[in-house]
Length: 250
Image (tube, rainbow, N blue to C red):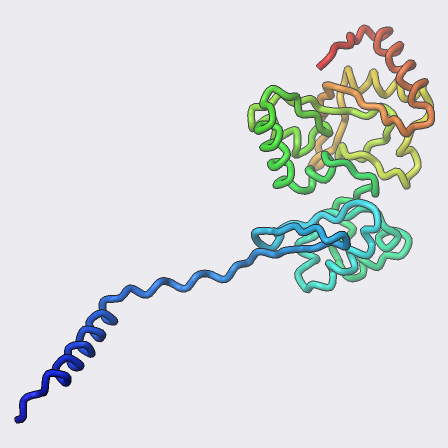
């Protein structure tokens, strides 16, 4: 057999070295595809969700159009936990037609507050609590009595104050009655004052799993958009004093 020439030997050694290096090279694992979702609104503002939502709350004004879009997705019915009141859910039961469980979902007012949204979104309640602790752990967290926000704050070691509303009507579960229903907003100073004394002394009476219990109230809130707000606050202060209930700053 004729020995290889020097160039041929060099080429053979180069090929052999390449094969050895290829055999020893560690192949990096394939990265998992990102599940992040970036949403852009009409003003060009973007929000990036690290993963698809597992619980959806539709709240605020103009929610009908948003609800129509969300319910285009096949699994929306199982993800939507709460919806603001819309004509589609009351006068024209469109959403109830596409979602058999819609009547059982939490119904919000269009002017829903953060504490009511947090009650339907426990993860949001946790986010609020983390923000409060990061800003100042000495702050008092005020929220709807019996809500997930109050529970999350208490578990995190924050000082909490359960809020009661003497000029608003309540549902049996302790949530505020929709403003669209009779008795939702109380404009009588005398009735609001009577409710304030009851809230301060007895708390909020609710029904849970067929059993009655009471939620304690630490602070009272009167909405400034009530046309009789000033007269209501005056009557409440007088009624609390007559009932022997002292007033103190949080």
